[in-house]
Length: 265
Image (cartoon, rainbow, N blue to C red; front, side, top):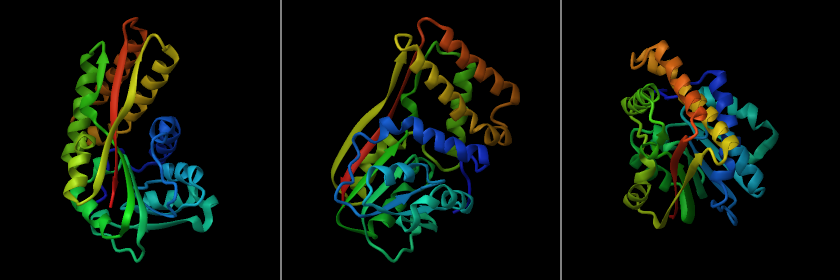
């Protein structure tokens, strides 16, 4: 699998992943439950941003981190040095796993969206799970995004951002397909949940934090967008101006949903 990643691998992006995990953790983890599990497989572990949360929330877990990027694995080893032998690392294609262990749990977070063949990944993972293993996946549903006022520069950038991910083989709406994907791979007891953000001027501080987070997230795709000639440097600035103006609008609304799925092997 070639190293093609919407957000890139520069140090600033690696730090953004840690900041993102910290910001979104209160939304992601209230529902997830790995109690009773001891040997977890994390697919698309990146720099270990979510791994840190998993280690903190379930002290009994040992985690095997798998990512296809050597750069991300190298940074993850630094970020997770405190965990000692609770964490191990493999740089592999998740669609063709070669692991000696069997796992009683598996975790995906913002990972399947970047994978050209999520069915192949789930089939590969399934071969390494014990009967009754738990799977939790949290994924994007970018078509759910709603912003008021609807500003043309922001909309154009967002459309290009999603187009770039699709051109790389990813799926910015993979969250909506989680149930189907899990069923096709033979998982059962599938449950689908929705969560996210519906913010307006009734909670201005939260709205401001989200618009700032959203700007940073969208800008993380800017190098790839520029290289693909999907946007110009001027349009990056215009997108930022649009998002700043949203906060200044007394009728501003930000809405976005992600999808979580639980299943059993």
